Amino acid sequence: MASIAASSSSFASGGAPNFTHHFLIAMPSLGESVFGKTVTYVCEHNEQGALGIVVNRPLELNLEALFEQVDIKLEIEVLKGSPVYFGGPVQTDRGFVLHRPLGDWSSTLKVTSEIGLTTSKDILQAVSSGVGPANMIMSLGYAGWSAGQLEAEIAQNAWLTVEADPSVMFDLPVEARLEAAMALIGASFANLMDVAGHA
Image 1: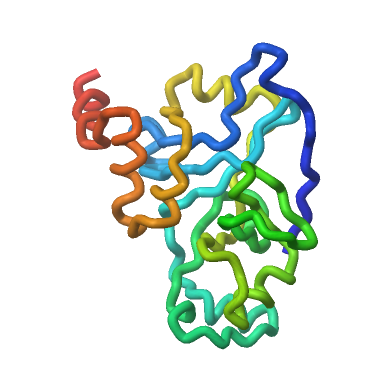
Image 2 (image 1 turned 30 degrees about the horizontal axis):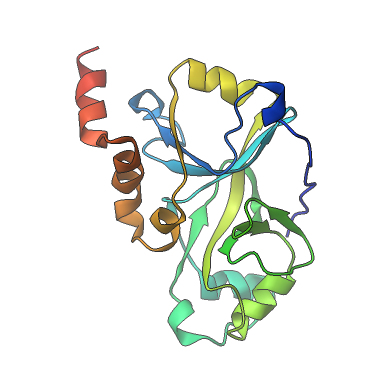
């Protein structure tokens, strides 16, 4: 599992937009990229850049197989077939657990008072025995942006942004998450495709 250096900077106070705890919805212009039709949850955004987890792209890998790779036996039958997600193109050999509630783990980036991103193995050991967080998305890799890069991409209309609703990523089936995130803006992805096609 990777380690995350959490930042405590007061990014928003400088007048710059802070997209922490926001969804990034990929615009149709990103259709041919690894981010085509994705919803990314921004876990951290500050002067140094941004870090997020794609929450609607499952891999052909389940939790049982992933746990075997890290020598942990997953005891909870109902979790064994749960998907592992493509979290983004950076460090795709590392595991990241986006979870609610926050809990108390060895290496966690606190996103909100309820949501954390954990990279330490102790959370997997807890999950394996049924005492892990109530909600979680297990991903390989993350989406990362350097200083100013995310702001520039948003200015170029690569992403729609909206404050995140945790129920979209934790309570809905994966195939419903894109449209549900779009609904937070009051739009639909099909409409976006029509607009892009006639631009």
